[in-house]
Length: 121
Image (cartoon, rainbow, N blue to C red; front, side, top):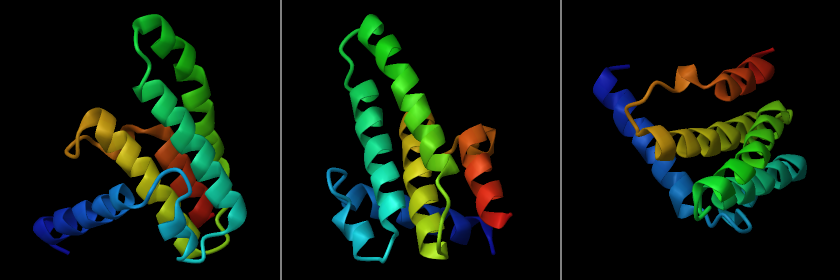
């Protein structure tokens, strides 16, 4: 796979998450993603939004712990299917990219690596 093809596919995946409403993730629910994973994704999305919308440094520091815990909970939630895995990684990459930019190395995110290792066994 060429770098250009990979890059376009990655952007399409991230754009797909952006199109899914975070509140209920119905687009992912329609893709037969398991209920435990949807619930973990909702908790992570909510904690992430609280952290990103924190008004000042004190509020951001207070929200950082719950956001990090929710990210690790999501990473450690088992995937029953490949659809679960791709939905999980899509959400985790979207959060990573929104913080560090699309060109940042996602392999430097230990939670993403843990999620991949858990799924691959």
